[in-house]
Image (cartoon, rainbow, N blue to C red):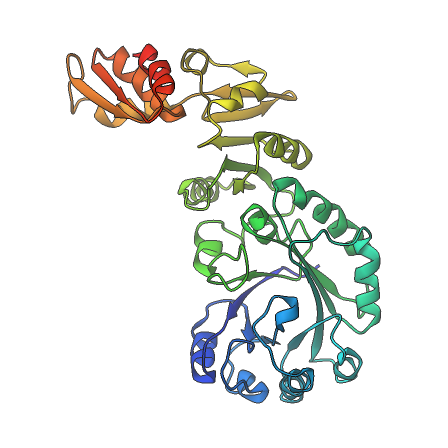
Length: 383
């Protein structure tokens, strides 16, 4: 299988804006979205392009912005194909699919797509993909909304099935779980056997800007068999942990990836982690305290504090640790004498528990300030 490409989605209010965004992209290919343009132009979408393009004009009825007649969309996408676009993306349910499919040539490919917003996808997605290939799709794109991490698991199974079945002109697929819990599907392109992975600045739910995909998530480097790690919390897309850990993996030459794992619940994460054979994870809010219920072995600090910020899978068991105490004290060592210092601690979560214990260990006098008196009392007991 060819290496998956990075495709940046661009749009704009005018064709000039669209072309500027298209030509400034550093991606391998660009998806030009015409559905948000005031006066869209199929020929103009590809005129003067510097890299391969996918031309898309997504209608409102499939999550896009185009509210005109289907005849107009047919004309726009037909113009793009006639002008030499490498791909056009058409909804599998569009009435003009047969006419567009007949325009395929060796250098012009058809993407047929289905998007499922707020609804469960049909049970047999493999049959759906096969039917879309039979309609003339070179690439089948299936996207559905993920509300939990475990919603990605059927996608992984489907990817393996499709990669075994696809051959000849039925050349590939792109599988996407939309939304924050589905970001992993955009990062693990090779594991999903995707022809390409979409990046962009919020054009679609859960889409990640191109620079973050490359610099933070190291999408180009991640192999299909990479060891998987991550940060689990809700929310997590703001976390700097993926950028730091993935840079470290790259510097050490490790075949590993560190993912942002936005879990609906801890049970959601545990089920996902087990199925994906996750090797370890950083734990952040709001799960540091409740993670205690899901680990088999605790280090002494985590047991004392009653919170976990790191879990590691060893011999089929989760081991929990807490590095927040040392992480808090290390920057202060040699710079600030804590013994006898009066400290106000704001908050009563997992990190606050660690800081309270750290300050107490160094002899500081701690006052805990929190919205819930009972939570503040539990943290104060550690100080």
